[in-house]
Image 1 (cartoon, helix red, strand yellow):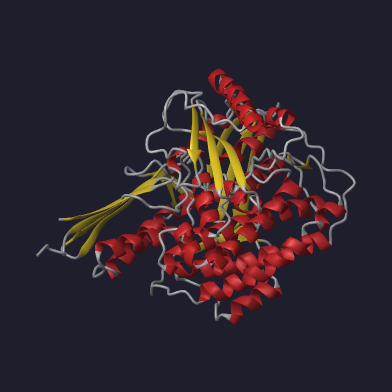
Image 2 (cartoon, helix red, strand yellow; image 1 turned 120 degrees about the vertical axis):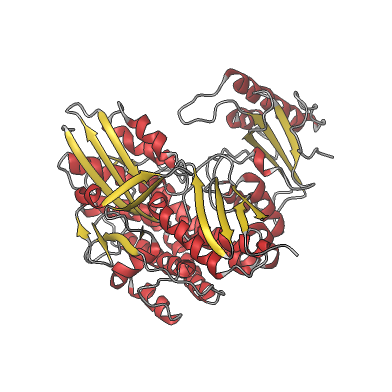
Length: 148
Length: 432
């Protein structure tokens, strides 16, 4: 998906980073960017392949959405650390794709693969026209903040 | 007025324990009558999962047991397989593995010291809350983690679940110039680590000591990280293959995790305090100097002061990593040839949180017939429960909220590797 976005956004003032390390490293990676989009898998109980759009600049994200590891600072806490350190950009949108398979060795499910393609298209459309993104396919996950 | 002589304390939410579990402490008439720590333990699943797999796959499969100490699982697995096949990896290949392990110690200890344990002592709910008042502590933690993660990326191929280790050596050896890129970050990390020793030594520690047997690896001339004999401060000195004769796992009714004890039923402890007690002289001079500078002497029996010992080990790991890089010469080949043969192999290494034991039985085709994995956390379970009992007995006058925090802090002394998917420990206080 990162490759598709990078290819489609060629020439635009956008840096696409495919990152598989620890979320806490994001605190250092953010740098001075004024606008940050993050795409990550989420686990909220919604239908697999559902898309979520969360405004992380407006408030703390539900940690349980991203809580798939116990030995690392998760994405929600990493963004809060960035906020506490004064490093959180003015605009931070987290795009979550509802996952289905989280066990070791499982492959990407068809609904999630389709959702990733769809989200790539949404992001490229937004970059092209800076049009507002469409509403979530399955509605917001419980307790999730909405973008303003 | 509520009767304070009888109460039940159950931990409902324990953040920063790196896992999920439940804790129950019952106090009747002013005496602690029950302490039970209920823990999920994924190594049980992995032992079954490994049966039928190829012996070379154990490295990558077991590394998934733990997200912050994958190298520990990989190293215990490869040494078990290599000993089984009659191969010993030495020279620069071993140095590279040790360097990778140093990287893991650096990032694991940094995470635990600054993000998970320090908030306890400084009175914060977590690292996020602490960052608002002490941004410099978090900034230093980030720099240390980055330095450790960079070592893992360059030597291990990836920060999380490194992919470069294999039976017999590595898949690829780094160029000398690649390792040179790590030096600047590690030198900065060394200064931060020295500051961590000073900082942690000033924390307010509960007055509590334990007298359990301290068990760790020992390798003459080296601080124990990647190999050694299994020793203790009570005179134990055995080879890895003798581990099953001296340690036994048993299932307890209140926990999914197995508990380890000595075969005579006694409790023992693994981890930084054990290594510090049995191999203090093998710390680098700088690490020993840092310890002496804050009045930390070996052995240390207060588990709350393990945060200071971890800081000293952090200095050692960074110092040794720089030494290994300075002495590095690219080996001619990335690995030795290893052919499987039927038999049983035992592997031990020192995960950041303590001794990690693996045992494998394979057939002539290299198929794994049986696997046993004993993580440091299960070895410390009994001691954790004993500490909880002792701490609660000494803290009955604390308000429930403060007592709960003290219990959580006690568990975090051991930096337990309690893996799960939901990241909280259940604790609630009930007055009876």
